Length: 242
Image 1 (cartoon, rainbow, N blue to C red):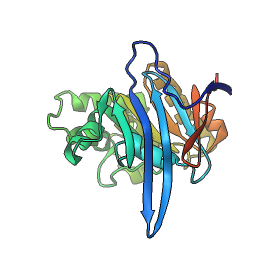
Image 2: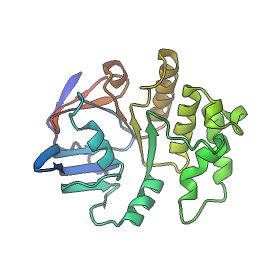
Image 3: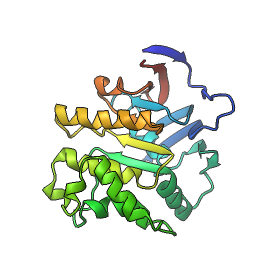
Image 4: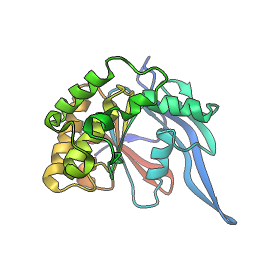
């Protein structure tokens, strides 16, 4: 991996970052003990970049992902999504921002068991104030894209792990998000199926999607264009993989 430098935001000239952290700290209070999960992180993720976020257990990966996904808020510092600061947004505004700008892919898929494939893909759309009239057509197109057009009426229990993760990826894409956040997306999959999912991420990257892939697996991390490595809540290394 080629070392790029410190955690200073690496912004391309004239380009607005898709996501930017400015001196972000997150402290949790456990009784009388304070745990500094993130400690002054500054970094910018530009449009079309494919990053892996790596580090050992307890390094701050999950906390960082929660901040980036607007699921948690920094104790100090600022976070911006496409130039919009999120610190002063209320819960409804944060929910709207997540729905429009962010796509999530989780290790455990997080599909709704009572819904079929088409309905699961459409879930993020249903939370918007104005549901696009073409939403169902787009969901069908995404199902075809991930190889599940013949499984639209199947429920999660009727699908393999790899198929469930493909549904999750299609769901993450339904609103054409600015940023895709994948949390250990291949962690529950066998080697062959994991490779298929990573190939799909490669294709999305080639199409210009911005992807942040949290993983503890070195081989998976190297699939990304660049790696941000955390240690004790701080950026330990930022580098290119190719």
